[in-house]
Image 1 (cartoon, rainbow over the protein chains, first blue to last red):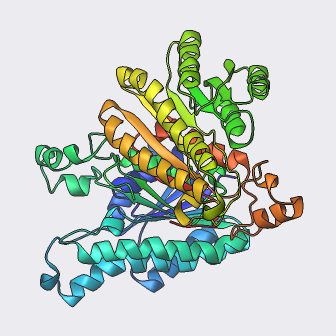
Image 2 (cartoon, chains in turn green, blue; image 1 turned 45 degrees about the vertical axis):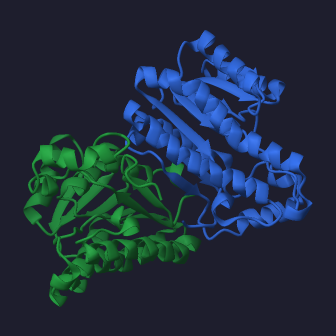
Image 3 (cartoon, chains in turn red, cyan; image 1 turned 45 degrees about the horizontal axis):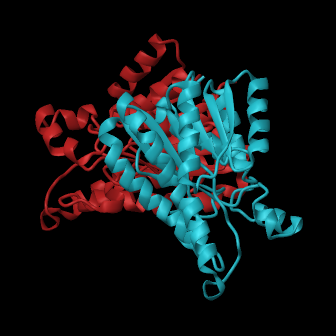
Length: 247
Length: 249
């Protein structure tokens, strides 16, 4: 029986690449995304390549939706081996005094609360299985901070420490929890906001490997964290960023 | 086979994490230079690799000696004509001494073997990697380099320094397509901790991790091999902890 992975944000740039990478390794992937249409598209691509995929719409900030989705997936597949929480984003770039309380909460909830809610529902299933891999998504900004992205940086820093605490709680049941921290990555969402030349000018000279990340670069790290090779790794943060940040 | 036909130099490869790394890389298709101060034991690992069907060269090296490292590099290029991967694993741990009791000789020896070896080996192999516009360097540091350990200040300093060296070298050679990373293992099931602890103590410590998973040399070798593979081509300047959850940095 193949392993089952639940991937939030699976319709987006990094999430889509992660779903593709895991499916290519024979893992059955459940692609969950706020944008149900985007999830369906990734599902279609995976199915066309011969992989196993399901798609569904989810708002990870709504507790009852998260509970319903996880219950449904567990019922359908009988298990959840991998949870990759990738849904998130910075949403706004503006000074702290310009953030409304609602906008602040929106960013914190999409990134940090969504991760908590998903882990809260999936962890007991994995604990019962005595196996499981949770991979959360932070950002290099969660370590360095970022002007004009105060709630995003705060949420991502929160995810790093939440994951360490979760790892300690779940370790006795052989459930591992780690964080992947991407740096600047060429996802469709950021590429539509900035011309490639401007982006290159802004970033490439700062990155020792001389380019920004492709979603596939990140996907390899998520996949590694599902393999037997990483069985001794928990509570850690993996920066994949071409060297732009070396904590 | 993730390392098909890649040429990998592994120092400290006679035992423990180094040996596990050489064998894992060999299984992934790499050709190995098995280098260690203990030449006979290095040759024995080279023979194991041959039995696995991997090409290998066993070689005696003192990684703290400029001449010896140069000879190792020469032998590598003579035999394989190139180098793709350098795994700096050779290291020493002893003596166990308080700062006030530590001799200058012991300080120098630890720093030279653990840290100096990184400099000497990288200096010999980086030019070839630059020329081919690709290369992977993985150095074994330690969690102790982050959190320190009483009576092992020399070891902790050398391991923290490796992380600083790795970050700087990553910045220097990144533009040439070379990645440089460190792995920080926790206490692993090797002969090293058994040199100063009883078997019971060693096992107790190995079991006292948040994750009920005894850290084996193969666990470390797996991550080193990942960093040497194509999958990790965008990772550089990082220090990854592999420790069954004992320490999270």
